[in-house]
Length: 224
Image 1 (tube, rainbow, N blue to C red):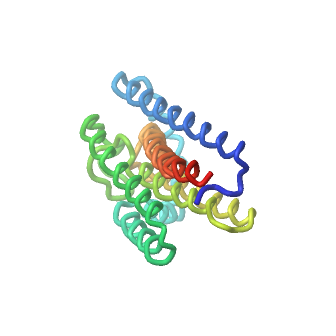
Image 2: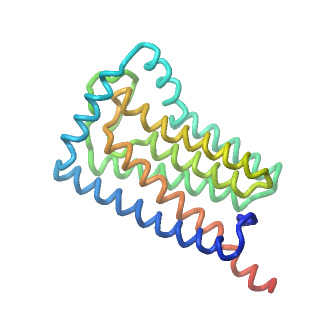
Image 3: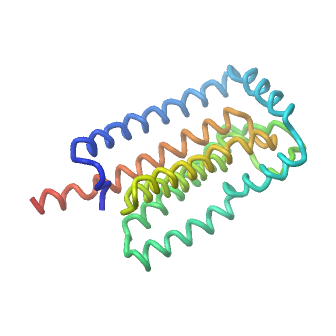
Protein backbone atom coordinates (compact mmCIF):
# COMPACT_ATOMS: atom_id res chain seq x y z
CA UNK A 1 0.00 0.00 0.00
CA UNK A 2 1.70 3.17 -1.14
CA UNK A 3 0.59 6.77 -1.39
CA UNK A 4 -2.01 6.00 -4.05
CA UNK A 5 -3.42 9.48 -4.22
CA UNK A 6 -0.23 10.53 -5.99
CA UNK A 7 0.40 9.78 -9.65
CA UNK A 8 3.58 7.87 -10.47
CA UNK A 9 5.42 11.05 -11.45
CA UNK A 10 4.55 12.91 -8.26
CA UNK A 11 5.08 9.78 -6.20
CA UNK A 12 8.68 9.35 -7.32
CA UNK A 13 9.24 13.08 -7.05
CA UNK A 14 7.97 12.92 -3.46
CA UNK A 15 10.39 10.09 -2.70
CA UNK A 16 13.26 12.09 -4.18
CA UNK A 17 12.22 15.09 -2.11
CA UNK A 18 12.11 12.92 1.00
CA UNK A 19 15.65 11.73 0.31
CA UNK A 20 16.83 15.33 -0.03
CA UNK A 21 15.06 16.30 3.18
CA UNK A 22 16.63 13.35 4.98
CA UNK A 23 20.11 14.48 3.98
CA UNK A 24 19.18 18.04 4.87
CA UNK A 25 18.06 17.04 8.35
CA UNK A 26 21.21 14.98 8.84
CA UNK A 27 23.32 17.96 7.77
CA UNK A 28 21.43 20.22 10.19
CA UNK A 29 22.06 17.82 13.05
CA UNK A 30 25.75 17.66 12.16
CA UNK A 31 25.99 21.47 12.02
CA UNK A 32 24.24 21.87 15.37
CA UNK A 33 26.52 19.25 16.90
CA UNK A 34 29.61 21.04 15.60
CA UNK A 35 28.32 24.41 16.81
CA UNK A 36 27.64 22.91 20.22
CA UNK A 37 31.21 21.66 20.54
CA UNK A 38 32.53 25.08 19.51
CA UNK A 39 29.95 27.02 21.58
CA UNK A 40 28.96 29.04 18.51
CA UNK A 41 25.22 29.14 19.23
CA UNK A 42 25.36 29.65 22.98
CA UNK A 43 24.38 33.31 22.71
CA UNK A 44 21.34 32.48 20.57
CA UNK A 45 20.26 29.78 23.02
CA UNK A 46 20.50 32.18 25.95
CA UNK A 47 18.71 34.95 24.06
CA UNK A 48 15.79 32.67 23.14
CA UNK A 49 15.57 31.33 26.70
CA UNK A 50 15.41 34.85 28.13
CA UNK A 51 12.79 35.90 25.58
CA UNK A 52 10.56 32.96 26.46
CA UNK A 53 10.96 33.69 30.18
CA UNK A 54 9.13 37.00 29.71
CA UNK A 55 5.97 35.08 28.77
CA UNK A 56 5.96 32.76 31.78
CA UNK A 57 2.60 32.63 33.54
CA UNK A 58 0.80 30.05 35.71
CA UNK A 59 -1.74 29.29 32.97
CA UNK A 60 0.88 28.81 30.25
CA UNK A 61 3.03 26.73 32.57
CA UNK A 62 0.07 24.44 33.28
CA UNK A 63 -0.71 24.20 29.55
CA UNK A 64 2.82 23.32 28.47
CA UNK A 65 3.22 20.92 31.40
CA UNK A 66 0.38 18.91 29.86
CA UNK A 67 1.63 19.34 26.29
CA UNK A 68 5.15 18.17 27.12
CA UNK A 69 3.76 14.85 28.38
CA UNK A 70 2.66 14.10 24.81
CA UNK A 71 6.34 13.62 24.02
CA UNK A 72 7.37 11.75 27.15
CA UNK A 73 8.93 8.31 26.89
CA UNK A 74 6.16 6.62 28.84
CA UNK A 75 3.33 8.18 26.86
CA UNK A 76 4.93 7.56 23.46
CA UNK A 77 5.74 3.98 24.43
CA UNK A 78 2.09 3.41 25.32
CA UNK A 79 0.85 5.00 22.08
CA UNK A 80 3.39 3.06 20.02
CA UNK A 81 2.28 -0.22 21.58
CA UNK A 82 -1.38 0.54 20.93
CA UNK A 83 -0.71 1.63 17.34
CA UNK A 84 1.36 -1.47 16.60
CA UNK A 85 -1.37 -3.72 17.99
CA UNK A 86 -4.02 -1.97 15.88
CA UNK A 87 -1.88 -2.22 12.74
CA UNK A 88 -1.21 -5.91 13.31
CA UNK A 89 -4.54 -7.26 14.53
CA UNK A 90 -7.08 -4.92 12.95
CA UNK A 91 -5.49 -3.98 9.63
CA UNK A 92 -2.94 -6.83 9.20
CA UNK A 93 -0.32 -4.24 8.22
CA UNK A 94 2.79 -5.99 9.53
CA UNK A 95 5.19 -3.87 7.47
CA UNK A 96 3.82 -0.59 8.81
CA UNK A 97 3.88 -2.01 12.35
CA UNK A 98 7.49 -3.06 11.90
CA UNK A 99 8.35 0.34 10.43
CA UNK A 100 6.89 2.11 13.47
CA UNK A 101 8.87 -0.10 15.83
CA UNK A 102 11.99 0.57 13.78
CA UNK A 103 11.68 4.36 13.78
CA UNK A 104 10.79 4.64 17.47
CA UNK A 105 13.45 2.14 18.52
CA UNK A 106 16.16 3.68 16.35
CA UNK A 107 15.39 7.17 17.63
CA UNK A 108 15.51 5.96 21.22
CA UNK A 109 18.94 4.39 20.70
CA UNK A 110 20.39 7.39 18.87
CA UNK A 111 19.04 9.80 21.48
CA UNK A 112 20.67 7.88 24.32
CA UNK A 113 23.98 7.61 22.46
CA UNK A 114 24.17 11.29 21.54
CA UNK A 115 23.11 12.49 24.99
CA UNK A 116 25.99 10.59 26.57
CA UNK A 117 28.35 11.59 23.78
CA UNK A 118 27.81 15.35 24.13
CA UNK A 119 26.87 15.41 27.85
CA UNK A 120 25.36 18.87 27.62
CA UNK A 121 23.89 20.20 30.85
CA UNK A 122 20.32 21.48 30.92
CA UNK A 123 19.54 25.23 30.91
CA UNK A 124 18.42 25.37 34.54
CA UNK A 125 19.30 23.33 37.61
CA UNK A 126 15.68 23.73 38.72
CA UNK A 127 13.46 23.75 35.58
CA UNK A 128 9.69 24.20 35.72
CA UNK A 129 9.26 20.45 35.24
CA UNK A 130 11.22 17.39 36.35
CA UNK A 131 13.95 16.74 33.79
CA UNK A 132 16.85 14.36 34.26
CA UNK A 133 19.81 13.36 32.14
CA UNK A 134 21.66 15.35 29.52
CA UNK A 135 20.16 17.99 27.28
CA UNK A 136 21.38 17.45 23.69
CA UNK A 137 19.40 16.39 21.75
CA UNK A 138 15.90 16.76 23.20
CA UNK A 139 14.44 13.29 23.59
CA UNK A 140 10.90 14.65 23.62
CA UNK A 141 11.53 16.36 20.27
CA UNK A 142 13.11 13.26 18.72
CA UNK A 143 10.30 11.01 19.90
CA UNK A 144 7.52 13.38 18.89
CA UNK A 145 8.91 13.85 15.40
CA UNK A 146 9.33 10.09 14.99
CA UNK A 147 5.97 8.93 16.33
CA UNK A 148 3.59 11.72 15.30
CA UNK A 149 5.45 12.09 12.02
CA UNK A 150 4.85 8.40 11.34
CA UNK A 151 1.16 8.88 12.14
CA UNK A 152 1.09 11.63 9.50
CA UNK A 153 2.62 9.17 7.03
CA UNK A 154 -0.04 6.57 7.89
CA UNK A 155 -2.76 9.18 7.57
CA UNK A 156 -1.63 10.10 4.06
CA UNK A 157 -1.75 6.43 3.07
CA UNK A 158 -5.31 5.94 4.32
CA UNK A 159 -8.41 6.20 2.14
CA UNK A 160 -9.74 9.40 3.62
CA UNK A 161 -11.09 12.60 2.07
CA UNK A 162 -8.33 15.04 1.23
CA UNK A 163 -9.49 17.60 3.79
CA UNK A 164 -9.40 14.96 6.53
CA UNK A 165 -5.83 14.05 5.63
CA UNK A 166 -4.77 17.69 5.67
CA UNK A 167 -6.61 18.41 8.91
CA UNK A 168 -5.18 15.43 10.77
CA UNK A 169 -1.69 16.10 9.42
CA UNK A 170 -1.88 19.74 10.51
CA UNK A 171 -3.04 18.71 13.99
CA UNK A 172 -0.25 16.15 14.42
CA UNK A 173 2.31 18.60 13.05
CA UNK A 174 1.13 21.16 15.59
CA UNK A 175 1.60 18.62 18.37
CA UNK A 176 5.21 18.08 17.27
CA UNK A 177 5.95 21.81 17.29
CA UNK A 178 4.19 22.43 20.61
CA UNK A 179 6.03 19.58 22.33
CA UNK A 180 9.33 21.03 21.14
CA UNK A 181 8.42 24.53 22.29
CA UNK A 182 7.23 23.20 25.64
CA UNK A 183 10.74 21.93 26.35
CA UNK A 184 12.11 25.44 25.86
CA UNK A 185 9.31 27.11 27.82
CA UNK A 186 9.71 24.72 30.76
CA UNK A 187 13.47 25.39 30.74
CA UNK A 188 14.30 21.73 30.19
CA UNK A 189 16.10 22.36 26.89
CA UNK A 190 17.77 24.98 24.75
CA UNK A 191 16.52 25.89 21.28
CA UNK A 192 19.39 23.98 19.67
CA UNK A 193 18.49 20.86 21.67
CA UNK A 194 14.99 20.95 20.22
CA UNK A 195 16.15 21.65 16.65
CA UNK A 196 18.68 18.82 16.91
CA UNK A 197 15.94 16.54 18.19
CA UNK A 198 13.63 17.42 15.32
CA UNK A 199 16.37 16.90 12.73
CA UNK A 200 17.47 13.56 14.19
CA UNK A 201 13.89 12.35 14.50
CA UNK A 202 13.05 13.36 10.95
CA UNK A 203 16.17 11.70 9.56
CA UNK A 204 15.23 8.38 11.16
CA UNK A 205 11.60 8.82 10.11
CA UNK A 206 12.54 9.54 6.50
CA UNK A 207 14.81 6.50 6.27
CA UNK A 208 12.13 4.18 7.60
CA UNK A 209 9.47 5.62 5.28
CA UNK A 210 11.82 5.17 2.32
CA UNK A 211 12.43 1.57 3.35
CA UNK A 212 8.70 0.98 3.68
CA UNK A 213 7.92 2.45 0.26
CA UNK A 214 10.90 1.12 -1.70
CA UNK A 215 10.54 -2.42 -0.35
CA UNK A 216 7.45 -2.76 -2.56
CA UNK A 217 9.37 -2.19 -5.78
CA UNK A 218 10.34 -5.85 -6.45
CA UNK A 219 6.68 -6.86 -6.08
CA UNK A 220 5.57 -4.10 -8.43
CA UNK A 221 8.09 -5.15 -11.06
CA UNK A 222 7.01 -8.80 -10.76
CA UNK A 223 3.37 -7.79 -11.10
CA UNK A 224 4.14 -5.97 -14.34
